[in-house]
Image 1 (cartoon, rainbow, N blue to C red):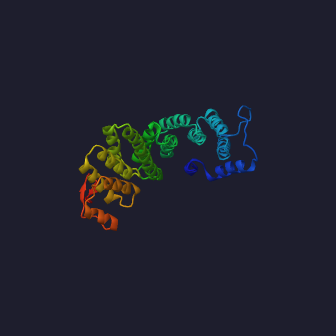
Image 2: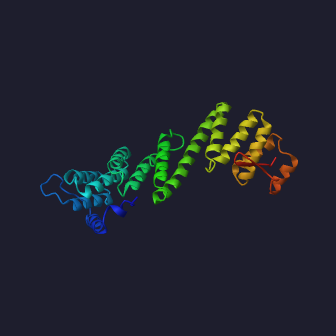
Image 3: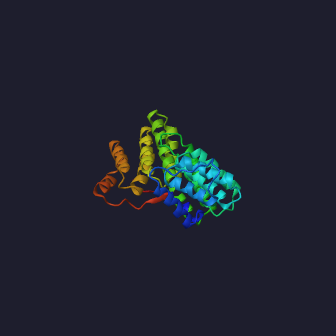
Length: 287
């Protein structure tokens, strides 16, 4: 992320900061305890250079020094935000969130407030674990990404937040599928059905919907609910005809001799299904 460059620092200052980073073969250092502390703008530029050079820990200390030694300068405000960015870049997410919350609380009208909210959302988003683990971070990411969208709907941050929000939905849908599979394996069919239906109803745009439909078909067959299995498979057939999950559902129905002859011929020949009926956001009609 380098969006912090727009608006926070002037081009000349950034040229200085990047020059400091480029000219150093090892690290960008500054004596923060000595009597000859650089002025606020140069000290801030050193902090930016340290971030660019991958010295996030040093950058945090430099930005703190800007705020402590020049508390009434505009650079002190910028340094508070960059403190959060340096910690985010260093993957110190909890500390970054604390710094960003402080910036938001102290400067709600700052020109960079949208970025502060967005960076806070990224801190949660980057902590999302795989679908098999607890999804607390995912829910927090959803909340903070939604906050960015609602507060700054016309910003570039909102546009990116919408993209990430779709990815978090996919993560939650995958988590439901994992749990549903476990319940199904344990023959806890009602609990499994609840998870699969949640994917279908709450996460309709995710990649896990075809699997949820196929697994619902599977559970219905295990429970002897043949009509329900056929209806669910018809939804899968109409909406995802090329999906391997539809093929799996079709094979299971065929094994139970639940495919009407005409429908089986249509499917085998690749013909379109009969005129479907729409129900609950999906289309019914193959069977």
